[in-house]
Image 1: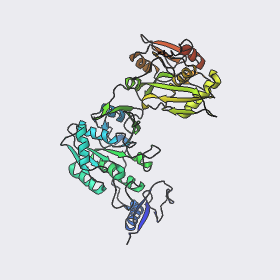
Image 2 (image 1 turned 180 degrees about the horizontal axis):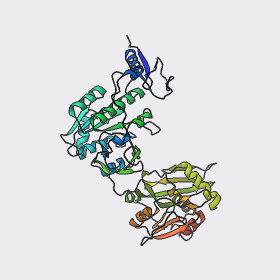
Image 3 (image 1 turned 90 degrees about the vertical axis):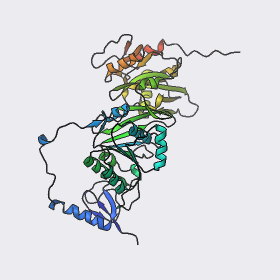
Image 4 (image 1 turned 45 degrees about the horizontal axis):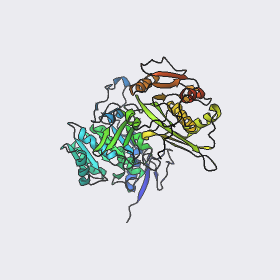
Length: 467
C-alpha cells in the first residue's frame, strides 16, 4: 500500500494535500516540501510549539561579536583563487554551475591534486569510483588524502563526512543526491533544497569547505529553485563553447569577495591550464590587412582585458536585413546601428550586419561601443583599421563619445601589449596619464572617430592573381 504523503511549508508549517508553487498560508514561494503524513504532522506541530521551546541561541549586541576576518586557504589554482576573492573560505559552500562537458568536474578534481596537507572527500553521484579513478589518473591526481565515495544517499554522505572529518568536500552533483525521508525523486525542487540545506548546515558546524556541482537548464541558469543560489555563499558559472579550448569562470554571487572577477582557463589534454594573461590569448591569430576588426579594452573586475571585436557588413539578399550578435548584447548592437544611421550618416538598412567577439568573451560594458562602431564602419567602407590602433569609449544616442571608468589602467594595458595608438573620449573623468610610446587620439562624437581612424586608412589590398 502506498504511503500517504502531505506537503508542508518549511516557513510556517502549514499542511496541504496538494502541491502549490506558493504557500497559501504565508505567501512564500517554493517553501512546500513533500513528506510522509506523520513527518509532516511532526514538522507542523514543531513549528506551532516553537515559541514554547527554550531559547538556546540568544541575541547579542553586535559590539560583542567576533570581528576576526574569514579564514582562507589557497586552492592551488591562481585563477580560481582570484574569482573566490583570494582563496576558499573555511566553512563556506560554493555552487559551481555550467553546461554539460564544460569542465566542472575536471576543475574540482584538479583542486584535489593541488591542495597540500588537507583531506578531501570527493562524493561522486554520476560516475562510479572506477570511472573517477581513470579520470584522476589522466589528470595526474593520485594522493592518499583524496577520499572517494560513490554515493547518492544524503544520510550516508553525512555519516561519511562525520567519520572522515575532511577539510574539503566535493559533491558531484547535487541533483543526484536524495533524502530518503522525502518521496520525491532526486533532482526535484524539494530534494535539491533539502539536501543543500543539510550540507550547508554540516559545513557551518564542521568547519569544512563544500564545493557543490549544479546542473544548468536550457536557459543557462542552475537547475532547481532560484532559492538554491540564495542558500550558498558563492555561485560560480563556468562559461565557454565546448568547441573552443578556452573557458571563463565567473562569480555570479560571492559573500566573501567581488563578483566582477573572472578566471580564464584553457582545456588541454591533461586538464585545465591557467591563462594568466588573457589579453594575449584573445588577440592571438588576429588578422592583418583585414577590414571589420578593432581591439578594445574592457574591465573584468580589477583586471583589464583586451578583446577583438569583429564585424561583417554585407548586402542583404532577402527582403529584410539580418542582424546577428555573438558575445555582444544584441539590443546594444541594434542601438549602435541606429546611431550610425541617424548621427553617423551611414546607410545600413539594406545590409546584413554580423558582430562577433573573439575567444568566447561576453562584452557587457559600454566601453566596447566605440570599437564595435568602428569595426562596423570599417567593414561597410572596406577600409582597414591600423593594426596598432585600439578604441575605448561609450557611444550615446546623440552620437557623442562618453568617458569610461579606470581609463588609465586600460591605457597601461594597451601600451603593455605593444599598441601605439588609442582612440578615447575627449571629455574624460580625471587626468589621463601620458604613456611613452602610446599616441592618444581624443574624439567627441562618432563622426570624429571615423575620420580619425578610417578616412586616412588605406583600402584593403586585393590579393594578386596568378596566371
